[in-house]
Length: 445
Image (cartoon, rainbow, N blue to C red; front, side, top):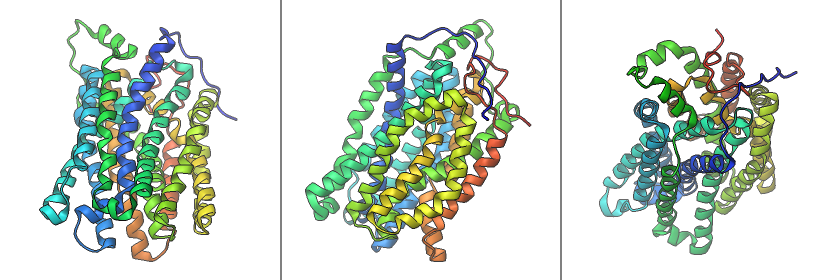
């Protein structure tokens, strides 16, 4: 039986139009971030051939490693943008991060190829991926905090699910563009210059996102906290105070993010490469399988988010982690049978992953009080993501190379689920509770 969801204290209401705009402004940044991941993951073969030396296998591994490099910078972004967002407000930081993120993505599409400028090509790619990682270090935590602080307490799971809808929408758009141009232009043109076109789309996406965010007021929760602090002139909590005061919360969230993102980046970012290079699907089939799976997941997200408002976040996470642990290997074996098996296997993994994905932005911001919410979220999320999330594609590929076992990514996901279940044991249930209430913002010892 799920624990009863406590009744939230009364809070000022936000009208539906403002709430929809807040959700849209948050989701647009997430879509832009994951659009970049989509075009990179689905165009990695073309990018590696254009910007890296060596044979195909070696170049692809370099490109996957470069994908991981951006994640190593994300903690620095979290350390910079998180405290800034707690001092200056969520809105200002989010307007800057989306511009940096989209601008860097556009510039990737403008890098001359390796044959033209030699090692400057991968060097420029690495630098731009670092800029993307730095900006993303503030983007996701800020967007989730922004959405959570606007959403009604009893519908935070449902509202937050649309942030992740933006995740899959952006990723799917990037994948569809790569697939569409591949079908229209053919491999020769894609290897020559066609792979660059999808990167240009990030520019308009970033401008639209910045416009949406610039038209919003900062969140009611932040404005209330700021007003309450006026006249006190109290300094924002330092990083040391955050770590000493909330180290248990940071560790618990880090464990959950580790499980979440090893599954996430293995399933979404690495899967096209795995299906093509390890299971022998054609390039187009390897793109179509995850696109179908992501469309299926997008339909389920709002239902999972709404369910978490009724039964709580923890029961959904528990179902997801246990289900993935038990069924990830059978799903991988099913994917190895061919195209239809790959579609069904991916859909099964997507179904089991949705309860985590749908509740991220409702679960994690509620673990911290307003004064450190942006910083706490950004630091815990990005440190765990940089170590375990962005490296998942490269680790999965390397483990297969070392062992010769095509199921190593599945075993890696199983290990991640164990870490998540341990962390979940210590996470408090926050569904239905107000973000204005400080009493629940701690982890059981």
